[in-house]
Amino acid sequence: MLRAVMRPLPFVRPRPTPGRALSRAISMGKFSWATVDPEKMSGSNPANAQNFVRGEWQDTKSTMNIIDPLNGEEFLVVPNTQLDEIGPFVEGLRSCPKYGLHNPLHNPERYVMLGEVCHRLSVLLGDQEIEDFFTRLIQRTVGKSWAQCKGEVVTCRKWLASFSGDNVRNLGRSFALPGDHSGQETRGYRWPFGGVAVITPFNFPLEIPLIQTLSALFMGNRPLVKVDEKVQIVFEQMVRLFLHAGLPKSDLDLLWSNGPLCMEVLKQGDSKMTLFTGSQPVAELLTTELRGRVKLEDAGFDWKILGPDVLDIDYVAWQSDQDAYAYSGQKCSAQSILFVHQNWIKEGFLEKIKALAARRNLKDMTLGPVLTWTNRRIQLHIDQLTKIRGAHTLFGGKPLEGHSIPECYGAFEPTAVFVPLAEILRPEHFNSVTTELFGPFQVITEFNDESLPMVLEACERMQSHLTAGIVSNDLEFQTKVLSHTMNGTTYAGVRARTTGAPQNHWFGPAGDPRSAGIHTPEAIKLVWSGQREIIIDGGRVDPSWTTPKAT
Image (cartoon, rainbow, N blue to C red; front, side, top):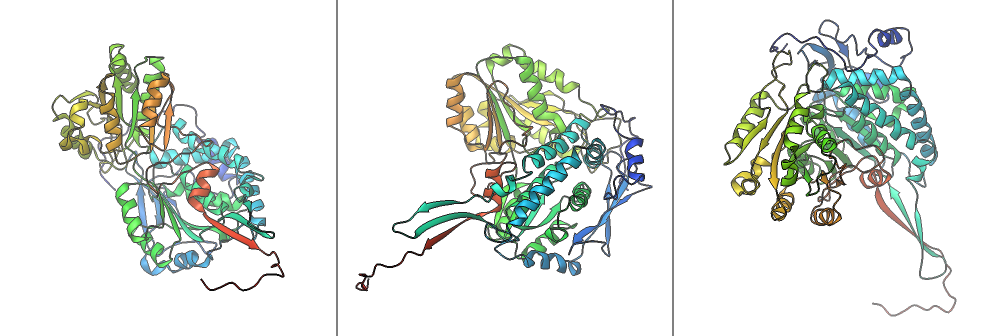
């Protein structure tokens, strides 16, 4: 067990959570599909997980322990799949033909079946106790607030409801175009890839794998799924609910493993397409090893610009605090840099966001463990930026105290560092300033009307183009910024944000042909299918036709 810093504070939830009622419902058999109790998982009573392959839940020869992010106790025992155990997973990838489990001309009954499964799942997630089960399980594995955890479950339920009935079938909608002569017609179809993979990160342990796995299935693929092992227990339990709701056991495999072993499975299994959500270095490695057959939703150094028109300053400050520090900044859409027009600074914007950030604490989990950056690494980054001429810490900048979060994780105050705009653009500083710190941290800078071109230059030079916010109702300013930037998910107007994408619109980066999306029919078809054109040419040849000269 890893050494903790101090004994934990009493944990106070921001609203009454199920607690004993949830455990009682599990023990009484209401959750016949579930194998863990989120309330009882602990070092003395660890939960156990399994691989799912060949339609069966299976143990492995070796296991590994997952620690509780709040106190370091080993509260999960999960499979540690070894190289000599990957055969069934390789077989699963190769078992699906390139034309898929279904396509518009083959097994169309599956479109209907998957719509019915989505309906049942949406109803199940509408049950308060099942909603609480997944909300609490997410909270136990990642340590974020109840509202943030519940938001994932609600988003999944709404998304499932929207793909109930015929909306899975509608993803297979084709088109036809008249040909050049009688009997000729071209028909366009969306066609599956076959055996595919879904690899997703720790920060959204339910929403991302659920939506991408079902999206892959909708289009006729058979997915192998791997979620970050720190949190995969959430999706493991969801797969059990999938089966309870009628998903065929043969439709997917779930692998617990480290990254290199998963890569070996993908290569031996000849994964026809891999969806990866996670860090940019891993994304580039997958691109090389899998010969470009990838779709990526990787890093996001996301910007927000507060324009010249100061409106609803309290709301804008609140939204900026949410975008930068909710879930301790561990969202790929989190606000990484804030360009503030001088008019907002004159009205006291910086003081307002500082006061809002100060409300966050471990007690209600509006702050929590930082799972990919240690305190030392965070401090080194802050120190590096504050050495820049004119830069200084606006607020925060210190590790949290009085907790038992293990030292392998970070625990840091919400922090903002001011860096002058001209210094940001210097070649020797730009890469450091635009490094994504996956924690409660943002860079803030100031601009005016004359320096807007410098802001746009900074946006152009950034390497990741996921989310952005343009906080302005000035149409001319909005148009100027929108027309000179490219982020895949951009919010514009006084309520603009960078985080909190609902299930009803596209979420994904732009500027890279490998860019993936999530949520919408457009995203599903782009990521999980390719275009197939079938040309029907059955018109009889004119009796007067003669063989032409060779060409």
